[in-house]
Length: 79
Image 1 (tube, one colour):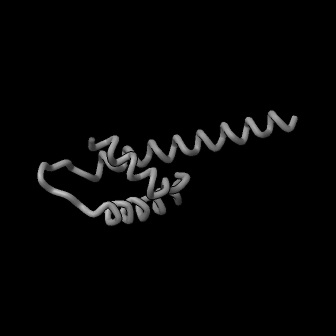
Image 2: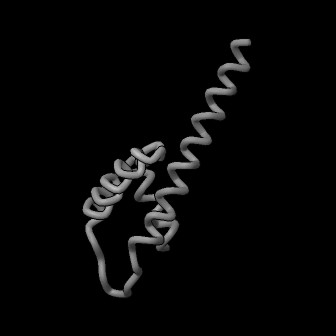
């Protein structure tokens, strides 16, 4: 039915978003080291993450999260 198809699409999109978020969180934890009194440009970090995502996409990853989501994930991983 039409409602079932919409529900399936919504579930699939949510699962894809969850995979993207999980990959980004793992990437942040593996590639950044928190240091008191230091900072790095968020755009530089995001650019490197996107480049790594494109390499991972070739291996089946679904691609990067958007910049706004990435910023929220950074704050979650490094409060």
